[in-house]
Length: 266
Image (tube, rainbow, N blue to C red; front, side, top):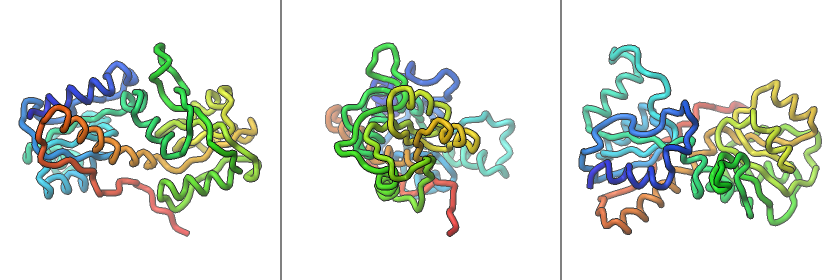
């Protein structure tokens, strides 16, 4: 099969028009007409991820976060970022990224996060015109928990050493939960207005956290890397397509590299 065959299925599942206007989604690097045999999914495409792909003879990387957020100013290979591009080209590895379109689509990132967080009967937090797709999700826990209990549950589910909790009362009971993958601090007023008892998102800004407390709301921040749950889900999608389309890909697997840039010292 060709890379373009897989790209067509990804774009049918997570249509490009769902992406935010300035989001650099799509084919990042490589030849879409190239034949592919081994696919690796990744949250981020970093030099260590590319080295893993080279060692495992990958010829297509499907990532959530775009490879190229900022255009290269030169091709100086002493730059680790440029060297990474050169390595990808040298080893003929195609890179395709689905970011905010995968966030917004039905059955995409925010549904995977809601499933992990055991939020049920969900609907988009910021719906598109169709009412089905959109950024974020809001729904219900089966049983009300305290903020502290749910924060501990989230910590264990995402396998992180700590979560940041912004709340006036850790013993408050919560049941209606909103989630937005990635940096969702600016959307906390939307979650509050939608009737959420708590909002799970990442990268909350210091002064925004003060606003959350002033509004007597609850935000739980388990780190942007919580989106790594998508790696296995993306593998499942490609394996389903491989069977249905009889593509006969040799191997589909998730990157084993932890690309979380943060280290916590206790």
